[in-house]
Amino acid sequence: MPVAPAILMPHADDPDWLAQLRAEAAATSIAAAARRIGMARASVSLVLSGGYPAGLDRVEARVRAKLMDQVRCPAFGEDIALAKCRAQAAKPFSAASSRAARLYRACQSCPHRPPILPHRPPILPHRPPILPHRPKESADD
Image 1: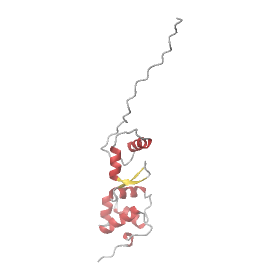
Image 2 (image 1 turned 90 degrees about the vertical axis):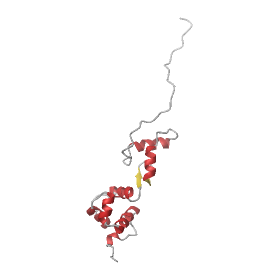
Image 3 (image 1 turned 45 degrees about the vertical axis):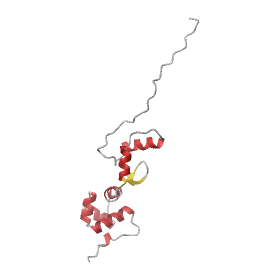
Image 4 (image 1 turned 60 degrees about the vertical axis):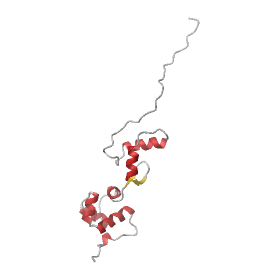
């Protein structure tokens, strides 16, 4: 049985997304894992070896989206399931709570928003028209 290279072995201090990337590369290959997340093989190899010169935020986002079905929600401030993200983005505006309204506004400009969902202006509740103020007529005139 072939021995896995050291970069594919799990490390105790790996974040969950990096452990998932290592597991994917060990199960298939570094090249296959790179193709699956849409990155170059050399870049994934550098990430796994700890020598990637750029920030890891984009790599983490790709791994979460492609291998873990998770995205970082800017509105919630945490990782959520991609299905939950898409379902929330597809919801119409709701003024039921301030949290729902903030979430709707955040989804409109979210980088994870599916491109097939068009921008929808919020549906505002119907309010009666405001009539202009008319001064009372005096009986002296």
